[in-house]
Amino acid sequence: MNIKKIIPVLEWLPNYNTSLFKGDLLAGITVGIILIPQGIAYALIAGLPPIYGLYCALVPQIMYAIFGSSRQVAIGPVAMDSLIVATGVSTLALAGSESYIAIAILLGLMVGALQFIMGIFSLGFIVNFLSKPVITGFTSAVALIIGLNQFRNLLGVDFLQSDQIQYVIQDIWLQISSYNHHTTVIGIISVLMIIIFRKINKKIPNALIVVIVGILIMKYFGTSFNDVSIVKDIPSGLPDFGFPEYDLDLIRELFPIAITLVMVGYLETISIGKSLEAKQDEYRIRPNQELIALGLANMIGSLFKAYPSTSSFSRSAINQESGAKTGMAALISVIMVVLTLLFLTPLFYHLPKTVLAAIIIVAVFNLINFKEAAFLWRANNLDFWLMMSTFLATLLLGIEFGIMVGVGLSLIVLIYRTSRPYTTELGKVPDSNFYRNRNRFEEVIIEDDILVFRFDAQIFYANSSYFRDNLDIRAEKKGKALKLIVLDAESINRVDSTGVEMLKERIKFYQKKGVKFYLAGVKGPVRDDLFRSGILEIIDINHFFMRVNQAVKFYKTGDRKHQEKYAKYIHHAYK
Image (cartoon, rainbow, N blue to C red; front, side, top):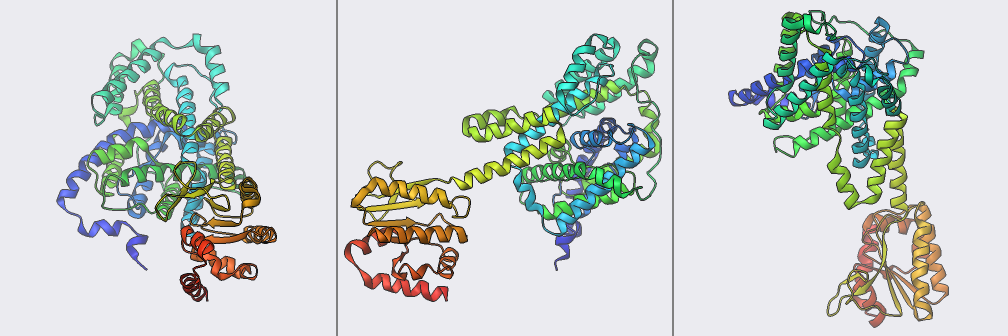
């Protein structure tokens, strides 16, 4: 067993040097500066006191730095997971109450346990059932929901908070005239400042700048803005160790939201990790190790008062751009958060909540992926509507139902595409031994008595009828002139029992009509399945060919010497 695969920190720590530390130091400080105001803001989204956003930035980061396979992904509180937490927990307790906090922390333990178990049993492949269009639709919808929910803090109006956008928009429309003038001005100016700084240079700590400006305005001119809501007291000190309170009924109620957080958190981490992996050649992302790392981060984090956390798109990108090379950058960010918790929390007393709303709104609206939608519209209409269906379902039905619709539609599209694969007739390219698609190569020679049929997928229970129908349609077009069918099986990588029985039945059907049936380019494992299923009882082993042109040549010339040599070879390989 390779201990470095289990504990990835051992891959880079023994060879750590000063040159690596310089990049990690700058990146760690930069991400830490951004993480502190973001942590406070995201805790408010989750319905928790601000301090819990900073708790999420401690132990989870340490655990991921040790066990994560990516060296640049930044773990901690994020807007999407925070809103999912608020959506799930708000139905069970009053936001901000002791029971609400306890449930959110228990949710972190559940999410971590599920992720860890999935990683141990190598279940990372499950995430493949969420296609990229589904992920795009889901994240864009959640970003819009998060952004609109923050208008309550941006405008200083107690709008309804919901993960169903129609109710949020309706309430905003009814109460928009009640907006707080001072709160709105500070919030909009903060949004504009962040956007301007991002345009100038993404490395500028725009969140920290607007936080400082907001604190100074409220501290020194607070009497003029006494109607603006501020954060007020944030407790100092590090979180205590303690096991979350739980009972089985509560765990059952939280299970659906925990599954949603598991899927969303893992998707975010893998997508971010893969994008960062492509920019370097020092390491490779290992999906199941990422699940283990996230699981430990959330499980151990919950013992230190952290609610569910995962990787951040924005902080991970900044981490990489600032020169982070290893997990040491995350540990430096942790040190900055520790110093803040111990000594600096009183500085955030006068921080306006509208400034935090501005930070959140700009951050999440950048996740709305218009470019991907435009690309899918041009490239693949089915994927575009898959994305739009997930987007609308998430907006109108809520986050939990949105992810369910996305998974369901992904499976339906997968079944549809595998049950109706591409089929075509092949023709001979003049003066060559190659056979090509007649629909793409007009010059190919099509012979009346020969049908070369290509099927571009596995043959299994969901598409065996489709195979039979397409083969029969093409054979009927040939009419009575048809004497040979050659199945080009190079694209067939698997055949199940239903597929084998259908194939045997069709071979017998055409044999009764005096039509020979040959197979060309059959892969070894597929050929083994056919042989085990008794296909040699109805077709001669000499009717298996390496290439289509060899099958046609054998039919025309009866050149048995070469074919019998090949037949002996495949028969020996099967045995």
